[in-house]
Image (cartoon, rainbow, N blue to C red; front, side):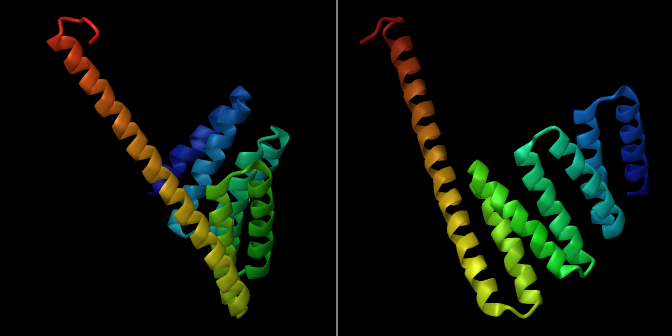
Length: 171
């Protein structure tokens, strides 16, 4: 995994030298995630904070919400629970502004974990239940979209079979 970190650091240096801001964002996120997986939450947090400044400069609101989630999780790992809640609260606000239900659910869930850690059980349960409702809504939406796609594929396949059987003439 150390080699993966070195590769990501080299990639970050390369895209910075090229002036590729989007590539820099990808490299910072990738490096931060790798560091987090290695358990180096402090360095991961540094990458995420740098990435947050970059996505704000680029006016990337969905990216900003996602990075705030990463910052909140890193802060939680470092025991900075109140700061984690602040990050997730900001993530939640942005997710609601842009209509990102998945990120909204994640922010609510991560906030519930932090609130529970602080002993705020009632607030934690309220946030967890709200997250569960959103996750369930998203699951139902994905199932419906999957069913609709299956119906389209079946319909296309039947139309193709009909076309073969009729020599290409529409019935």
